[in-house]
Length: 349
Image (cartoon, rainbow, N blue to C red):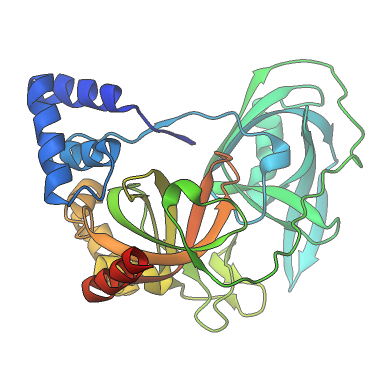
């Protein structure tokens, strides 16, 4: 999915249309909010806060055409449309005394190819959909993992995943060995520098002071192995770890939001302890509350919207939106006294 950020005029129009309030009244509310926050947020950032306080969800998501080359290990909820380049025969295997079946499909688009194995009951989808080489298919609800044999990425169908033939054809597609390899170059470590958000660029280690103006209302946790904290994969019988097999998952927090400092706004990702600081509670408590009270009620009670914080982290390019984002390494309250001393020192110099 792609996040759509609106202009100030579009935000005001959206709020007006959904609340019935006049646009001039909304502009005044936005100006008052900026004054309340000591002009530390931009007009756009204040509009997001006003919208939320009036019960209007302003961050929108639109369907994005995901290319195969942009699929990377550990992606979840992958939806992709691609051509079937190859369908391999069903192979039976025996593992730990249990018999299973697997058939691999090679998917392709104009950016590359990816292996898409179907396991056990999933194999029946080939016959039930009439899937064959050359068909264009839509895969929804998939997830991606590292292909250890080819040093690339492969796609797996999730428990609620689906395959739909959207166009029949006889295009053979590229050869199955034309596999796209995704690689990342290591980035040197560097000392974090204090910057305004408008100056934050991918590759920089930064310290920014800003206000949380919006959060993305997604599931606030992910699960890992309780013994090694490693990634879990969907297996027969539940979630499993490569080293420890089927385990009872351990919950970890994940929060994504928009932070504004008056010069610009940027998407920020908070993992584990950093997210706990913003929720004000631990991962298990958050998981339990989210599942008990429901999606909307949970996010309506999120305590940190409008809160001003200090963030230290690294700026990277988001794989899907291609926009800069900060992955937070630490989060803290603003040290007002320290900020005043720093400002006085800057003025004095």
